[in-house]
Image 1 (cartoon, rainbow over the protein chains, first blue to last red):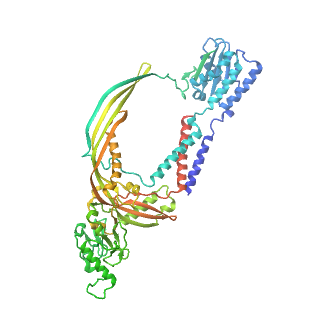
Image 2: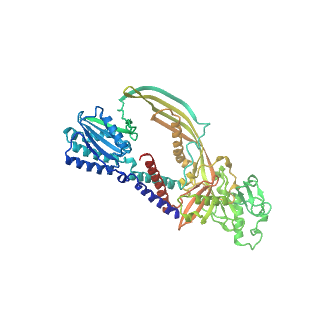
Image 3: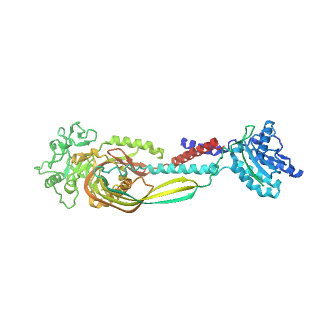
Length: 256
Length: 374
């Protein structure tokens, strides 16, 4: 009977596993910082304050720093380069946190760019960054940059906390119980003895055998279908971009 | 007709000993080859040494019991049994009526414990052709059963101690061993599928074949339980028996065990064996067709016939076990020691195993998630 209790206690201990301390330490680590750099003056003062608060709040929830940068141009470089330099510089001077998602709005090129660093790189690979742009693209085109920025923050939060169905605890629990049921079922059905004879047990191979055998080719059919589009799956590995400061990140950008 | 085997030295009853594979006298330890003891139509010697009261046929004051004894002696010589009340046999030792059912062919005298064989139920049409003698004796069987109980992962704890074996009976169960032969024929359409990529397209090439097979089929000594009393599924699970120990039937092998005669003859059981062997033949036929992606039968024909059927006695230990007022019956292959039968199951243990396995798998999944996906 003792063993039974052991199993049951072990079982419930496992239920508690997913609650183990994980990423909630961000709040303590988060530095008081500026999250909005409105170089192109796209937001009113009120909007800028609101957005600053909103990005901070969402960032805490997501466990990453969420930054919105706007500029009239990209310092004679690409938007990619602009963001990379910003991150390298900010990281070195402790202005921004290591795990960060940055959005840059370049008003000269009318180009929006997203880069994700650190922990966020794995959670928001290129393809996901592109999806985030999809979500606020219409707002961006309409010129509602404030709304676009809040949607951006929402989506970052969503993807940072997104757990694929096969990684969810309740799915694991169901799967584990299914395995348990199958194992016990097999044990029960085997408890009365199993069949240990098969079609070979009484087979007399000296007297049996193939007497006639024919394999005639008839015809060939050929079907073709288009190769499915190459999907650049780089989940986990991020985008494979590296800034000049040596920071790897993922990214996606689009003209609006 | 009662047949008993007596020790030539001391006159006690001989029993078949599975260890030495000889008839053995428990009293003086003398052993005797089965062939030497085989009944040849006369009662074996040793009657002089019989412990039972020796009836004096000439005594006028014979006890009525002894008079009966004499009658039966006469019947033995006639090799037939015609009395109205039928199945009554008397022990040669003590004269008591041997309790039998209609199917019993060998048993022990319930009064004095002497092994007795009912000769008239083992001759003529009812004569077994072959026998596999017991290789496992009673003590070994008990020990094996105890071990099996202890290894039962789902059996309740009380059951595991296995000290409540109610009775354990060595029994020769009648089987028919069929030799089956015939032919099988299959006509199929099979395909081989190959896939390759060229340019922007994936090509799937399917080659169709017409496949024909004709095979000779032979299956030797497929056993089918011929006793009405025995559970068919239980008996099927006892297989396989190893036929290397198969012997020509001789009555002394039965000494000390129970034995029954068949209730169904070989023709009655033919459909059962046919169905079983057809399943085997089917998988053999399929195994001759290989190297294809899919195989569809257009036509299949398996024709199997009985070549021979041997009436054979196979050794089975029947174990009755009392657990919580209900009786559980187990059968053990008396040759290989394989045990079958539904043991009682403990709900607690089932729950524990379920919880344990589930928790283990769940923990594993969680650990993998933490290590590789976070």
